[in-house]
Length: 138
Image 1: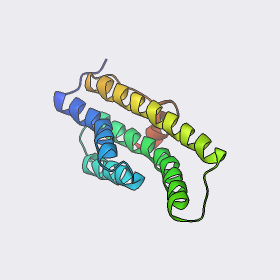
Image 2: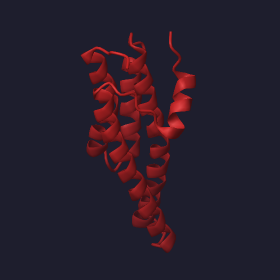
Image 3: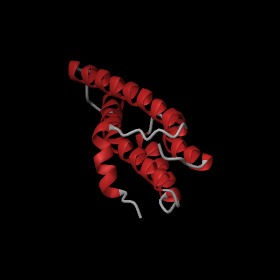
């Protein structure tokens, strides 16, 4: 296993924890979490450690589908509450799917942050290959 400096482990781990913290603050507005993750990524994209850059990129990539899934639910809910849309079975099915997706992502994010802080290179199934392509060593 490759050795990393403690500060590198902390920064890489914080890329995941930051998304959780911001999610709690900006919960009703999905864009807040995505913007905060982008800012954190931009602040660390020129980090000397590939480990830190790689995990900032993976964290950012995991937030993109979450943003779209949560935004769809947000706007559907707004249309029900303030426009002429009505409650439907489809809405509650989608709400359930979004809640399950967010719970799974929450658990995976916490697990990843803990393991990355220990120096373990956690690779999310779909996102790791894309992260490898976007964040080359060098």
